[in-house]
Image (cartoon, rainbow, N blue to C red):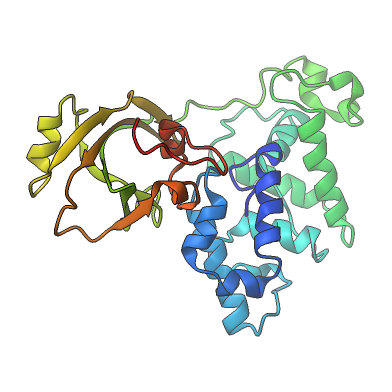
Length: 318
């Protein structure tokens, strides 16, 4: 689950921390979602953490804490799609399943000199069928691991090491000298730009955060008060016009505008902090002591803006 959309080098430290905090499915199932999201901070694609938590609950509560071992049963777990189910059933339980990741797509596109768009479902299905035809019954897990590693270590995206490749003698792209032109990948969709205006309130050494409930990025994480517009605020007056209710402000601190890139979105983030003399009424979020802010499950962008690192605390006055 961690390696969905994440490189091993980035995910390994999270994997180890995750197992240390939740060594069994039961431990994960009984945890609060905030505890799970806290460990996941900075890894991105937070729906994976929520799905993993839901899957653990399902295994513990519905399956008697017995983890499913077949492709069909694995698909019933939240967040487990066809690729993940095939990978787990193949590598963990040696079931004969086809496992095709980006490395395998590239390898087979070159082997068979497939010039169609590698992003298209038709091309991916074509390669899936080719891999399925090569799958050795009873030893598919070993074969799957081999072709994934071959793609990752030898059949590289930019500079494939063809002279060291054990299957280059069969590679149609290598024979034609077109291995650097394949696979063809169409341009990804343009990122959507969003302007996020955040108001961070501080009172008596604590900072105000709200839990993000919308079915959107960062669901279940905590963030300051948000006003999302088609533009970025440039003055305190703009925040005051949007905020309902008076604020007794002692100090104003705007932070540098920050750009945050997600897979299909570009976030332009503006953050203004207000130090208050009196605590505002009619807000029902979470006041967090500055010394505890590092452990609050929140988008990594706020740790970057506020200068938070693992175990460090936030100064009360900037």
